[in-house]
Image (cartoon, rainbow, N blue to C red; front, side):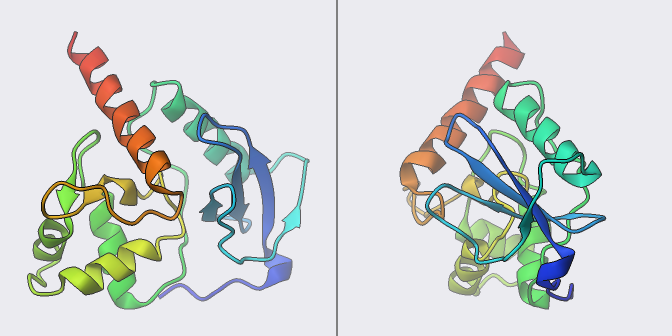
Length: 170
């Protein structure tokens, strides 16, 4: 499990995006959080404007994602969480671009088929939305449920990915 970094270890920068400003939080070697507008993950970090390898890479990759030029991310990640949360988050990155899974599918993917609710709770604690694509998890009946950035943002992200997949097929 990754230890929670101390405040003095963390730096942040806000970037514009089509879904509103995103606050990127990193330590020297990895991205630790992405915060949506009006949904601060609670990590205290020094705001910087100077170059920072991880923050610059995260911004560039997110810009490319929003421009439709990227479907996966390579920025180093270091989300702090329990072993179960880490297992769920590791499974999230295996959900193919522009596809959705139910909480039950995600629970089965981690070998815990009866843990849909626990998977949902872990999904909701994901500190790295978009990059670790928790927006691709939906309710069993196909409903958009629970998302830290709000359901309108979740819907936007899913529609964006669908549009990009359709463009790639054309």
